[in-house]
Image (cartoon, rainbow, N blue to C red):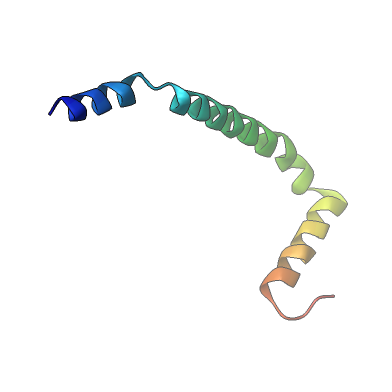
Length: 64
């Protein structure tokens, strides 16, 4: 029983998972900011056309 309690106490005080969570949150925030920043670029002009053609090539067998 003491071994189980010691394992639970060790798990509760371990901080390695906290660093992974912090990095995951930073990546999530940066990803959202990147998507919001690039959205106007994608929806207009040549880049939007390029992405549409790329998407068509990936989903169908014919590429133009």
